[in-house]
Image 1: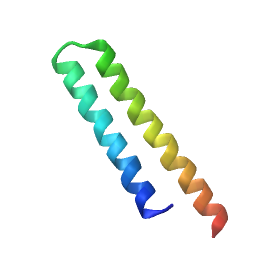
Image 2: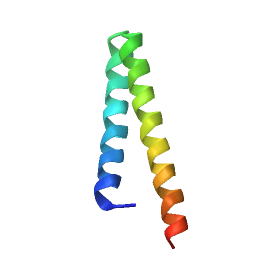
Image 3: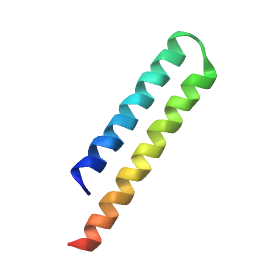
Length: 57
């Protein structure tokens, strides 16, 4: 996995956590769900990158 990809995935995960927290604090279910979705996408990307790296080795 490239270093830039790691940063992008981590940033998306952090953004998702922030959205989820703000949504929970403001009782905005849509924003909270969007944050959880962002986190899920980031985790899937990270897993895909790890699998790809495993086959490169």
